[in-house]
Image (cartoon, rainbow, N blue to C red; front, side, top):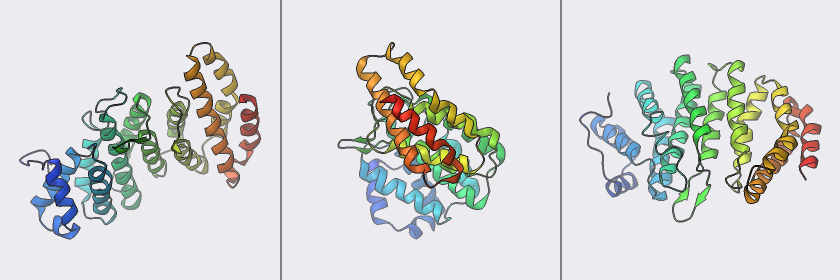
Length: 284
């Protein structure tokens, strides 16, 4: 079906009331109702109303997808909508605006669809690689890295993108040769000087990195990045405002500390432990 044609989406308050009072089976039992609800949820996926966005829209998408209430063709259509300029890239480059909620929760919906593909295998390899390219482009261009936003709830663009990457690298259609560009995008988002991550973003970003290591990622790529932190920081110290420099230092240290704790019980990355510990001491 085409979600765009011949359907009028509900307004926010109408959708909020509808999702809060109607049961999943009642929504999916009628095809027209299901189409209208899905289109309405997509339209308001970035609502600044956290109750609607987090507790109703996202949770309903979770139920739809995890309980296999949506057929594969519809999921592919939703995925195509998600990776479009109006969703994953809506307002890209803006900071401290509400457009971040659309981008962030779109990436979370992408993660759900990738999760379902990891269970049911309905996406082509070409489509998975297309999603990979879109996610990398998005992360590289995302400037709004806020975690919790007062009165509006979680933005968490970086954490949600990490969740999408985690499902992506679990996908059997991905090859080890695809990993370096993903790692580069994740590490580039760690090494940012706009602000300090304070809501465990670095821990979420470590998850897909560890997954790739378990799948055969060459450790030299991570080792090289870690070893070069002191040199890169010394270079950036002369180019950044002092506050931004210390943001950068904090993000590096926090990431390395979290990585050190994570790899203690990970044989695939145990050889990195002395490298990480040395880098932490160098940065202090």
